[in-house]
Image 1: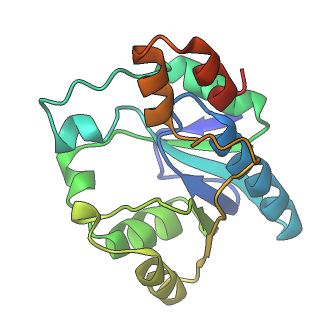
Image 2 (image 1 turned 30 degrees about the horizontal axis):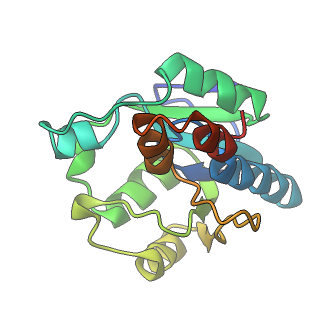
Length: 184
């Protein structure tokens, strides 16, 4: 997996998804498998857009988030999933204050050459997370990007696949539940 931290000289064109991917749990794994299939089907490379630091540390500095993975561990797991490229962003006040349209068009489309963006069913981005999926689709159309919403991962187990749920299980001492959500 190629890791880009500087976006001035990006090679290739991409289908991408965006998120923090803490734990790279089964829901993330589902999204990443679909990402690779979508990229292949559209003749593009697969890419993950993720952050060095958790956005919540900038948005709520007093919040003590207990991460599942270190940055190195996350990147290792993403690499093992077979993703072609990882765009690694430092989440700063400047990034925080971008509108969804600015982030989508100026960063993802123009700088990273993302032509197809897969959005998790509950993922929101942009200043104050004020906009939603329909807005992302509209903005994508203005800058030549297809924006596609991904379905919820449901394997029939009744588990909610999220990093927050893993953290809650670990805090409660329920390692078995955490393992089932993580898949590792």
